[in-house]
Length: 109
Image 1 (cartoon, one colour):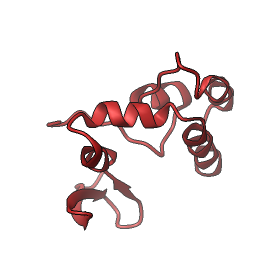
Image 2: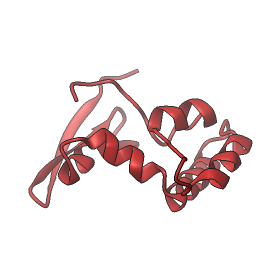
Image 3: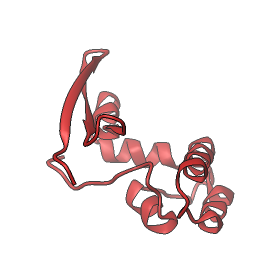
Image 4: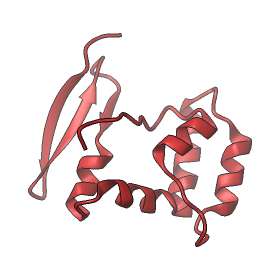
């Protein structure tokens, strides 16, 4: 693996990190975007991931780009999404579905 390169874009007065290793596949920091909404970005991301439309989008993206994606686990999440008791986090999504479109890294925040 090559070195991770970080760049920053500035939007609406906040700095949003963009990460890449190969300058073809870039990742945008959801944590930085969520920090615009709240001082607790983890809660913002988890609340966003509870939404049925978000789960459907993530599932569609994975089906198009990830041959190892687990569609049965995705279908279970899709049925539960939007319910009051439904919870979702990036780590839970990745572990259950073998997702590659979201990367969860422990960090400073």
